[in-house]
Image 1 (cartoon, rainbow, N blue to C red):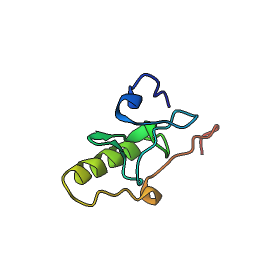
Image 2: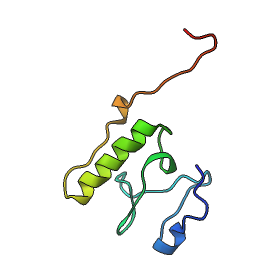
Image 3: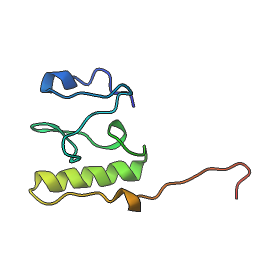
Image 4: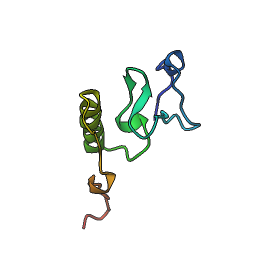
Length: 83
């Protein structure tokens, strides 16, 4: 993912060598008040995964048990010719 220039260093955040934002405890948290979801964190780069991540973060901020079961996130394979 392209995460250069986000200013993560200013809040104590880091990325791995590929640019993936490192989160604490698998709960999307980068630093106090800073959360990361979607393509910039580990996992498939899919819009519906990012949406589920965002929902989980909103639940965590609200004091609830935000969780994403990545085994249930659908994915797709494109083939040529179509099947």
